[in-house]
Length: 158
Image 1: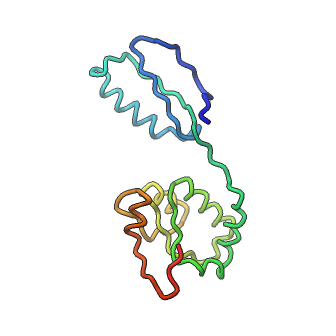
Image 2: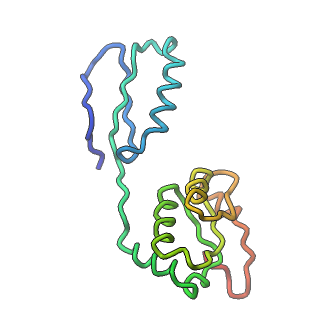
Image 3: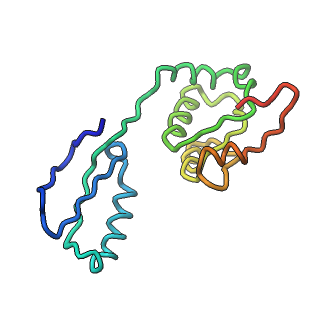
């Protein structure tokens, strides 16, 4: 459920464009900056005197019920050896994964890591996790199409 946790707008305000940003509260900074820059450039052509941005979060990230299982798996060389690839699909999941790996002691060798896009790859790199593959387009479908799997008789498990 989306909840308005910030400012409310005066309905029918002439010359003002209202824009709601729906990412998790506090995670709209880059989008807010980009919008402000672009809207400032377009100010004359839009007819608006000003633009007001408000956070209207529609998502909240929380630790999943099996986070402890992830940490145990990352701490166990025998469990990790079951996987040829770990696929990380968002910067937020990259942060969760990296945090779990840190709490697990970073003592095991990770399988190959694939990141669904550049932002996910950067999040992993900044946490010291080496990324072995990023698809040409930041889409899960492209990751599935382009992931370099060499199927063995036992099969790759990602």
